[in-house]
Length: 240
Image (cartoon, rainbow, N blue to C red):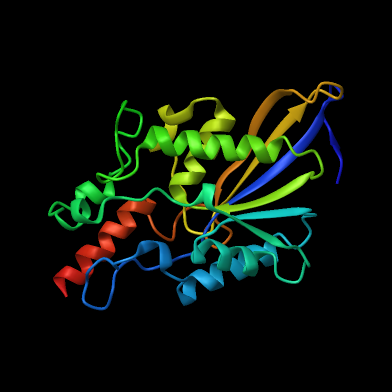
């Protein structure tokens, strides 16, 4: 689908998704040993199927996903029946914390609000990845995708932290807005960017939709933010 801005610029679109619901907590109430390997829960699969049904009329012509299983599974369910190849991409995998640091946390507020200092120079996610380094990795990969002219409408399936960085790229705010952007499981965001018709330079970007969950559009189903929900599950298991 070709889109043209009012001034004649070529308008291209990214539908940015977070993966569906997962559980980072095992049956004993402990965080799983390898968060990268967790699959979707039954509810996560239902979220993805509902999202795919809601977007059945969208003409995606390219699909890219974080290479983590939960993102690839979400992408397959959202795009089921379209005949699109889903390209796994390591540069869009989620931030990783240090397991030793994480396991030593006793105050669950440190998990619920672990993104709060992302904008501070040198800050790391739970003692692991540098926010600045991951931002550089994600924006470079995103700009490489944008530089490929063949597609008009991209489905990009990633993670809560990664999506915040992509949205920060669109806003032009980088890490400054990282902590203020929430991403529900299997939410979608719509980002348009306009290119000069001759030079192909990006002349503007706009966020057309943010954190839309088709199963809970007005956020009445759960008042907790995404990291608060993880902390709440940990507390629930610990109290059981």
